[in-house]
Amino acid sequence: MTTSEQIGEIAGALAKAQSEMGGAIKDAANPFFKSKYADLGSVMDACRGPLTKHGIAVIQSPSAEGAVVSVETTFMHCSGQWLRGVASATAKDDSPQSIGSAITYLRRYALQSFAGVAPEDDDGEAASGRKPGQVAKPMPVSTAPKGFDEWLRNIEAVAEEGTDALQRAWKASTPEHRTHLTTTNAKKWDALKGIASRAAKASVSA
Image (tube, helix red, strand yellow):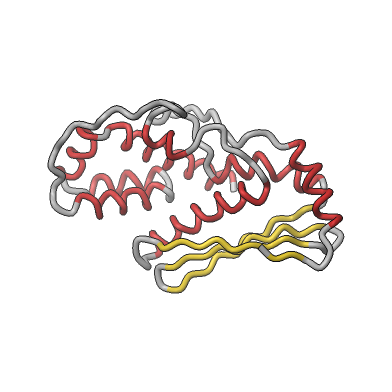
């Protein structure tokens, strides 16, 4: 992390803002996903109001070099003081779909880390369909069809684009891949539909 020469004003403002922030969580009702999930929209909902109230603006600038994606997050205070950090990750490939998914991922985690927002339910737990602290049940043993892992990564990336994109990708997929996912890890499929539903709502409200 890098900072302006002085940070007294922004540190005080951030402390006040954090005292007013709640947990990043949404109880969105949809026909697919019944677990709680702290997506980018819910993290923003939890921190944007208190940050703005205390004079802090958030700027997130994405960049990419091939499949290596970075997001620079800056908290700027009305006093002119600032805090800045860069988070990076390697996407599955350098396609726009994969890059976009990685950017969303980095924006979410960078923002909640900078703001000090704690999601009440970790998205990894939600995706696995279990509650925090609950031991995962073993999945049925089944041989995955050829290319399944790569297909699943693509489906995960598409889910970040919304319900329509996910439905189109699902219909275009081979029956073997769809059947293997729904029979061996139905909760994963439900989680992906939930992510897509939330992404669609965030797009409409943006």
